[in-house]
Image (cartoon, rainbow, N blue to C red; front, side):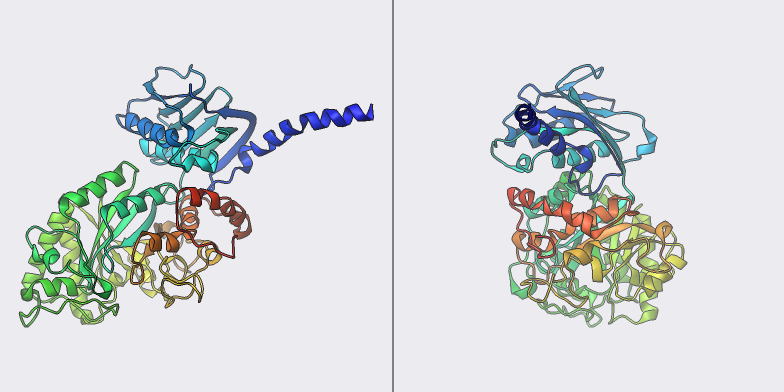
Length: 512
């Protein structure tokens, strides 16, 4: 009898292991969902699984096609996309748009049973965010570009999820070193996988002007011709910029263009002599110092120039924001700086956009609808902005600047704001980080990547991963039970996924 009992348990062991491995509440998801309820069931993908669309949104077909293309390479299955009037089909993935106001713009409800998998949302963006969760529930091999052998199944249960902050961004500096359209698209895909919804493009600086302005063509002809170290440089035509914007839109990411001013403007000053007080063009700059350049804040030609630039950028930017920089204007007298920012905010508003600026702009008479981005080690400017009724984007350099070195041996990056290892990057709460800046003052968070030392996509990925998933969680998840130790265990499991996705990530000793 004892022998038979032993054989009985040996026989059942695989079943017990399957149940344990397919427990939705133990799934390693980043960002952590709002609520997870596990059930004892498993949904298996097969060559008969279809994708069904239910709802009135014209974007559903695009989302169904996106999901089908996402799943096909690794599984080898053809996921046919069809319209549905009901949820009666089995072996089916349903994408459903339904009036569920409690989910807002980006929340979703994911129900997984043996028969079907249903992603339901109030808006198409919520369906897209739910698809990213589904990716992580599947084996890491789902990210492969070639057919793989794996158990294509996900654990049963319900996920109810929505973001904590409406603004969750990543910035890419394409001014100090220029990056191609394909590089920017890769960056968009990487941040979209973690439910980020903002791409902030730093398009102008002392070292390069990277966006075509048709009324001022020398900005790219001359100002875009070089970069840090004296390399070739480059720029985006307006057609290419619109291509980037459209690509981001399909991933429910808003592109925010930044044209830095009145400082960080040497590329513009080198392009047009009339923007300089002596009517002589500045020499192109390929170094990394800051604070030495300024537009003429007391000359009308400066504001004609800015009006033209904002007008052209606003016309090709469907999102609501334009970033005007405003930081490190050390060569601009304070009184002139205030006059300048006061005028520029009116120009941005004239073209129906909301102005964002680094928190330095709080020195001016900024209006309440303006947004200030906190970055400095000392938060005085950000607190001043809050006291003026302005919302804050949290980007403290000591925690969230992705160009900061991980440690003293890191081959890339800088450390003027300190070293930022993966634990330090994650283990803080935007709502409690600065006394005087509370949850109600914060629009969201953004992780910038400045590119003084960044030359190519491999460099970008090395500095971004594995920090970026943690930043995504800080923006998306409720942090009441935030724990670095618990997060680290989830992050550990993503190494295989990074490798399959060919991400050149930093193998942090804090994690692996």
